[in-house]
Length: 168
Image (tube, rainbow, N blue to C red; front, side, top):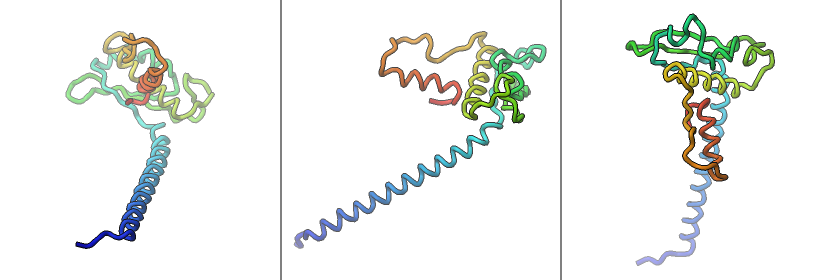
C-alpha cells in the first residue's frame, strides 16, 4: 500500500483552488452578460406593447371610446388598442408608450426615466383591468393582516413594486 505524500495533498488543494477560481470567473462573466442584456432589453421595453386580457366586451372596457381612469390619466403619453381576445374570452387591451419624443407622462413635456414610465404604464394597465372586471382596484397587500414592522418593510416594498414589474 502506497502512503500519500505531502506533495500530493498540496497539488490536490491547488487543483481545487484553480477550479474554484474558474467557477468564480464564470459566475462573474454570466452576471456581466445578464446586466448587459437587461439594459439592452430596457430600451426595447419602452416602446413595446403591454397587453392584458379583460373579461369584458370592448364596449364595457371603453364605453363610448373612453378608457378606464387609470389609463385615461396617462393621456397622450400612451397608444392603446382594443381587440377581441382569442376564444371569445373578452377583450385584449394593449398599451404602449407614445413614440413622441416630447410627450411625457400625463401629457407633460417633462421626460421621466424610462423605467418609471414603463412601471407607471404597467400599473395603470393592471388597475384598469381590475376596475373593469371587479369595479375596484384590488391590491394584494391591503388590508394587511399584520402590523407594520421593521423586518416587514422590505416585503412591503417588493409587493408595492410588483404592480408595475409583474413579479416579485
